[in-house]
Image 1 (cartoon, rainbow, N blue to C red):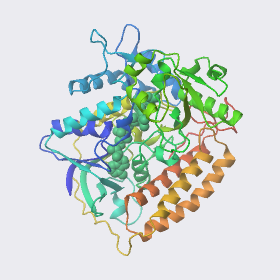
Image 2 (image 1 turned 90 degrees about the vertical axis):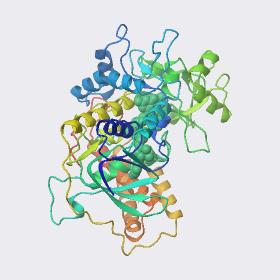
Image 3 (image 1 turned 120 degrees about the horizontal axis):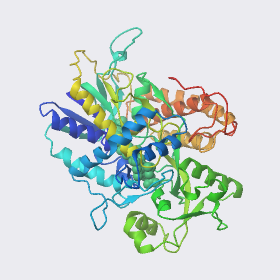
Image 4 (image 1 turned 60 degrees about the vertical axis):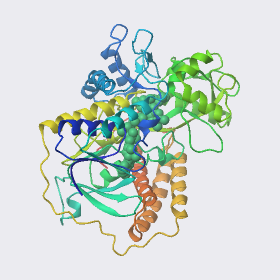
Length: 528
Ligand code: FAD
Ligand code: SIN
């Protein structure tokens, strides 16, 4: 198959780019491959909203910039922060023009929420289902554009570069598209593209306990890594402090930070509102601080969770703002009006990823990346709440504008077909499940909210063994989705552990017991 623009992923980042390109270039072909139902993505589950400065009387771009830099703890790229924050409101207006509905007051003014680390109310939202509203809007728009070919249940396996067709050492690599698995037929085929964009989202599943859906297995990052693109800041995993704790059930449901912005308290089992022992901002400290505080409360008490107390809040108002959270808790036998909600930190967001410049260009020619799989410099060592949808929208637009000025050249290479000669069907499917569970528990145990060097080294050794086992399965068997995802998660875990070991200090969302707060040399992690 040939296309002009190949986009991998149908969340906020991928769809925004697709609809913009399709409208501007009606004669060009835009192909979106996405590995599940078209709407399945982290975007669909986003609750709190999108941070952007709309109320210039009470807020300012500078205040949003300052909050972002403070959360990022010295590692943000200040020019990128300024660019994203000043361009953000325009991207949201555009989304509203396309039909997105955000909550407004009786005068038609946007109602603004507040989350951890924000000094002002600036989070625009659609109740507690903002991501679903954005996804709906973008899908409706893309359905109207004839030149978008949407390929749901298609899994991108690997990016095509010179590695696939030329011998010897290659410098200045280019991307020529991707090998893609049709998940229904099991066939693997080539999509040759003038320009490829990774918009493949996050990797929460590497930890198992996560707010992310099952599609979030870090595929784009692993593909880019195998294609030797630059990957950075993988040690900065953001753990969300308040995932609903449901002892037996691994799939976590997020209780938005906006609930704490709305006035909920965090309490330990004894009823103590413990957050002020850790930070003067109490429940509204940035989420790395809240996650570590909860981790410490749980370790000190031996309890499995802490509690979010909403019982003092006006429950009718609560239901109006957070209908999805209220209902989901009720379905899980927790009545927010009466019960404290058991919560634990869970892996939520990857601050690092495939390194891109201000136009979304990666270190490989004709390969772009945007959204959660990319590292732009906006988040630095820790993402400020509700800045990621903003980043996805702004960077999709940056790539679009770049491509309007610089049309990628037509690629002329003869791309070899995917070669799986000599491989056989994998009969023992349970082995993949076992190895996935092994990987996830290793990552939770040795590379979680609080790390130390001894554990990271243990993780590195165990992961190496797992890597060889999974590679052996990959070499011998026909590829399927689970095997590809496992292979990708092992690659991503390797990057997290190696880049954690390189960071010799505590910073932002990265906390290692072996360093004190003001710590030592900062080895800037170049490509691993
Ligand atoms: P995604 O929306 O995750 O889309 C990735 C797409 O790539 C999916 O369609 C996926 O199926 C596809 N894909 C992945 N791998 C492959 C492959 N190999 N082949 C083909 N397709 C592939 N951020 C905020 O700013 N505000 C919030 O309120 C907020 N709340 C959140 C709540 C939850 C529960 C979660 C999980 C995240 C939240 N976030 C929030 C983070 C935010 O939702 C994500 O960072 C953002 O949506 C990422 O968008 P994206 O387009 O980059 O990726
Ligand atoms: C939330 O609603 O708490 C999630 C917000 C975010 O991840 O930005």
